[in-house]
View (tube, rainbow, N blue to C red):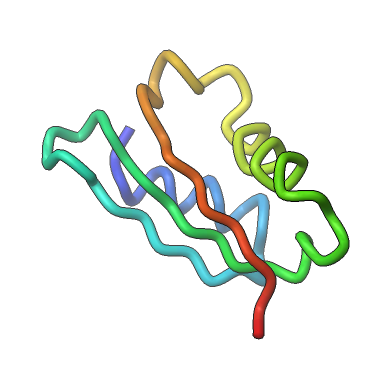
Length: 75
């Protein structure tokens, strides 16, 4: 999965979000993302991260090898 595919997946799940995806090792296997969305307002951090991973369905661990997630609300 490429950085562009990750961003597209996240944009579909969080259309209002500011999204940044980074290839951590330059190997196309280890990514980090930051998702800033109103969706997360009032939602515990663990649940926020779960929502991000759920956007990828069963592709986590297969097509998407490793993804470090940072979430926050705007402002």
